[in-house]
Length: 446
Image 1 (tube, rainbow, N blue to C red):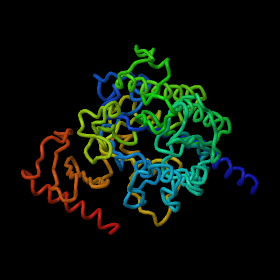
Image 2 (image 1 turned 180 degrees about the vertical axis):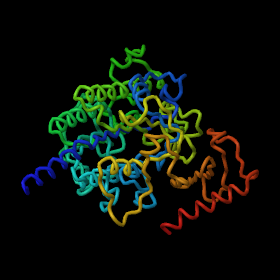
Image 3 (image 1 turned 45 degrees about the vertical axis):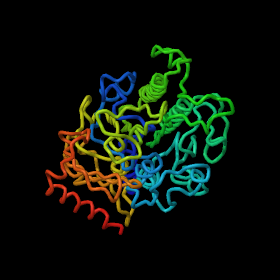
Image 4 (image 1 turned 90 degrees about the vertical axis):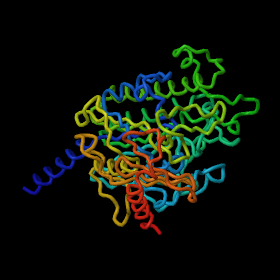
């Protein structure tokens, strides 16, 4: 009888593991809210695979990153906490910043939580890290079993250099893969990872943070190399441009098309391995496209939203996001309820059946009821602060200021997503309510 009971317990445990979905979290870098045709049909960009993903899942129209800059956004995503809690409030810059401690090592990341599930997840990260690469801060020291990617904020797409230094790693070991397009390199590594793990019949978590379509940086180029948007020759040709094209917008379109193609290969590999039906897939941009009036660099389009990256206007914070979970999320749906990036840690824990650590204040809430059955947003309000910028959204109302000494501006996002009509003077009661809510947020860590 005891042997039979043990056998039943092991069988139940195996069944629990089999029921847990794989989790694939894909991020891209600085993609504009209005870049994808599934968000803005008149876009010049071709993105058939992301269009396909939206048709097979849900497109989120009011999804926010918790910070409008790369480093901080990633820290919020992986910790489920806003910057004022996890402490990484600024972009890591230069060799010193990117190879420093970055995000405090006491912070627990998504893979660390998934390792505590009854059936622990295999975990892999492939792409842009950008939250610190000192000993103890590297992906394989923070819960990931495998890592192939770069430490810095952005690299040359073919030579993988940052500020004159090689910046590509396998685990913690520097590697050289010159000539291989970074977008394809990261997609290939992710595909290899989940194919191997699927054969082992273990649930897996794959974090695929593409560096594309981040703008080029002349400091990352070889001597004599032109500073231009980089895409493979075939990408230009398929969308009707010459690889020698000089128009920055057309070159940007080719970069996004190459990104979309890589994501398509990931989707195809999921189908071929039979894992698509059992995979929760979430795609998002880390922040809005930059709109800083830099000629040839600020190409991403955030329309109809105002401004862009590194600001707390909607164009910096509201980002394109698509989710697919076959059998759970109705294909072709649109989710208008406001959610934000810290919610994804909570979703991952729920999907894995893992408990959250005790004594940690999380800013994410469970988004799964919203995504799967159209529940209302679990959030009462959203708080944002980056450098001198600050904002708070509560319901359809949002207040914004660019400097602490400036008065708050107030907008009704249900009617004015472009934040064009300041209603602060006309709605003093609403403004007062939001100011009180903003103070309540800040009282939590002051």
